[in-house]
Length: 99
Image: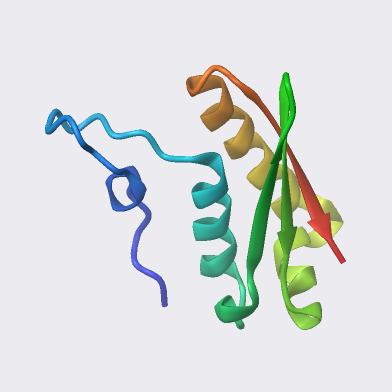
């Protein structure tokens, strides 16, 4: 069972002020690994364009349903979190779940 999520777990705080920045790629990887049965097979890559970043998430075939969820609800929730984190970083990111 994964521990509770805290942004400080992912942040690289170099200033000592407690306000570290989390990359959206790391955030998606953390969430996906917490959801699946085979976290070692989670692969996250980021393709950065001029205005948009595309984050590609790949999981084991048997874990695909856990990441997508019933009627896509889990995937939609992950995308909402990604959107909020991206807005905080003043950029736009899109999540692609690779089958």
